Image (cartoon, rainbow over all chains, first blue to last red):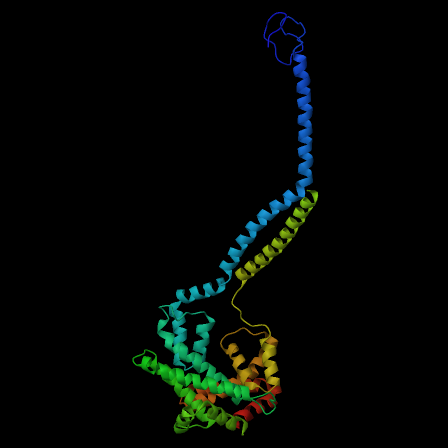
Length: 245
Length: 136
């Protein structure tokens, strides 16, 4: 804008001309407008502050919410990843120490302790599907059945006279476990041809035959008859031996 | 508008609390997964064995006691229950090994159960009952 007196360039908000000192009348309107704008701006800022303050809990809550959602997702992933970590660690140990694990397993086999063989396999999370341990697969299946049969028989035989609970359910379980071993062994017979650990599988059967002989009084012929009989007759036979009925 | 804002604040607050609980649960679960180590002795196994000995279910006590012979760490005061259970288990198996021709193993098992019998004279009656069940 130009000074009305000297024609020099003056600022929009200058009260007087910086060159001739005459009053700059036109700037008064601009100054008034500026004051109004400043006032309005201040009010707007104050209104915004008030609004912000009143929404503070909601904003803070929302920020926390976002962090929590991220945290929960991250923690869920971490939890899922670590759920079977101990099993994975145990399993990786079985692959790292194949030689020493096999030595222990073979030690149990040589000692004829097939239950410990099975428990060692299970307790150390050895997977029979791993190529390193695949050779024990059949033996492991049989030792599982053998363990169940022997445990059931041990439980049944070692009831003292003071045991008052129902023995019939144990008898039924024992009959089933014994039957399962012989059935599984029967199915495995073809696979046992040329199997590396055949002697141990046969020894398992021999030991169960022996237990049947000692504790149920069954010789080879008696055992064959027992196995050929119906489930009911087998259960009745065991009841007769154990309960004397 | 104000009611809507209050409702939104409450909704956010409740969701925060729920998510906070979920987060802490997951954190605890993750930490427990990480710190979990091989279980050497299940809680209550000794009481379980004692219960079976008292009920004269020596077979189950014997089966449970096997863990001790397989190297499971047992608390000192509870060891005798395991030993009583082991006595039954060893006797059951000694007969099988002896009959199936593994005389050396049978001899070893005999030695073990005799040692248990000698070391726990206060359980004489229980040992006699176990002997009786096998002789029936």
